[in-house]
View 1 (cartoon, rainbow, N blue to C red):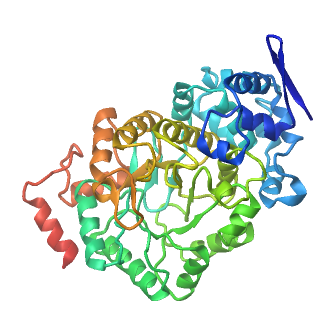
View 2 (cartoon, rainbow, N blue to C red; view 1 turned 90 degrees about the vertical axis):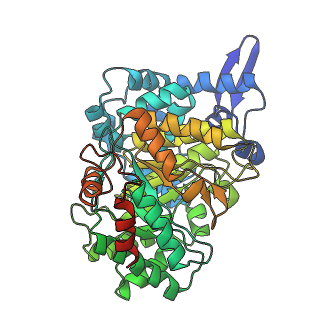
View 3 (cartoon, rainbow, N blue to C red; view 1 turned 60 degrees about the vertical axis):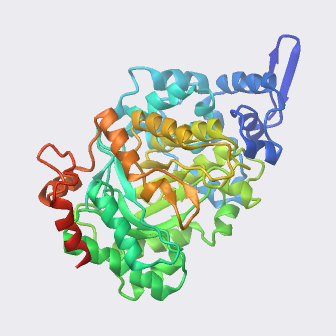
Length: 460
């Protein structure tokens, strides 16, 4: 179906829904690289005006990737909740934006609506929104998950403690864990990106994290971020796996490039559930995504990268995860060129994930060859904190020495919590007090003599 809109005496035509969504997208280098971006500001405005008039029901009859060619499309269509969608079924995309910003869209209403929203609907309405709109609506979307603690409660911000080491050295990893714990990070999880894919090394890392958590009685969960097939084998060998990790994307072909499909993710989830290691919940999956992943695999089907990213959230939603995060600036400037594009993408991803009912966190990051710096990350961190982001990364010094990119530090988490009056997961905050790392008001104890005692317990 061809979509048209005129601006003055100039008429713009868009070949199909896929083309309309791409041309309505805010500028970014990945869409320019793919050849799907608007060629002018006038064309982008015309696409947005045509999109604003489009009924939401059109997304249920026109797929951006054909149903018969793609299992992610089939998942989106076959799992759509028509009863939940009924609340907004009469709206256009522009009307949906206005409704989301209204007082009618309460947290409870948005939670009921989530199963009725498709990723393409979420992506479409985000393209009509200013940054402040993305922040305001995402703030109203409360998504709560549990394993050994509770993530996503209002007024809370969790942090993944990311103690990566370029040689997977257990002493170096332990030192980073100590650094993060005494600075109040680790309630989302303690998660290592391993440098090695040797199952022996990976098994040792899983056992190291489990030993720290058990010995110190920390109400959190661990994760070694390796391929799901490797994690399944570790589970079969009796390793104490908490969370099962996998990178995912928004098309079947892109997921195939990661060596996965939906059936494999289902098998991995069942393997994680079989261990019954959660104490207060059974959300066992941890997914990471990122705008540009489908394009980098030449598996985007001509769909703009932000819509592809939103489709990845349908994959995540199907497996009831504890954590999902967009590694927003990690893939590089070929996809998000500078700080402005990274900031916009981070807000879009968080909004779309929350609207679709996911516990969305963001790895607020950039590579060293991007036109961005830590001031840009401070801006995005502050905006996401205001938007109610579920969790962020905690990396020693914000500089990941294994993955070679810049992220957020333990101190950055302290900053945004102090600024906005946010607490950690309640079980983790209570543990910090019991461990002597925080006072009764949950403020960190600092270097008052308690930290050395705690360090000796960790490294004993």
